[in-house]
Image (tube, rainbow, N blue to C red):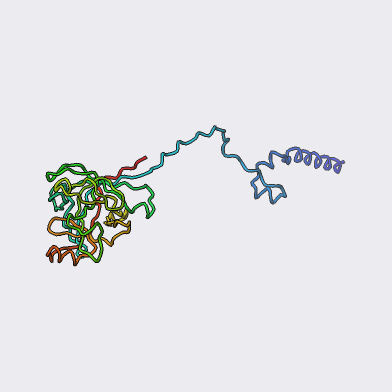
Length: 265
């Protein structure tokens, strides 16, 4: 009798324990970490979306208008080719229609226009636009260029001659000597050939290289030189010094000192 009661008691307790034992369910499995699920032979949980993306119509961006050219304005600096000594800046003044330079007085503002992403060829044969000022008692012209001297043997610069060109202002020309209106002609009346597209520009340094183009279109080896406050160009410095009887003739360098840059679109 006691044995039956004991068995009954054990069965009753077991039923109660089983009734309250946790039941394995899909929900309880979902609460497990991936590590726990793998230990139990279950697959890992699917990735949880952190947000619910909402579809929006794509709005086209306005494309920036590309830069086509840039205009660089400034002053033309004149320095010694060997020592680097600053002699001054090209001025708005003239002597007999030829340009002068000075350390402080009347600097001439000029500009040069180049492509925004220039190739090497884009930087050769450029025109330098000159501020119209009417300085020095003569009429200015639109471009700062070179004017062949009135007493030259021809319109070419060569190592075999002592020809030289003066710096001045001129109307637009092609890259060959052209008899056109220029500052020297206005002052003296003589018809002298001039050239405007004689400049090569280095954007990295601002250096301006002067090149005179001969009548056959070839580029002369051109040396920019100065005597007193006047500026010349020649291919034979020694011949020119002897011709002018000036031992103080100096080879110079030109550089565009920037004041403004305008992106043209």
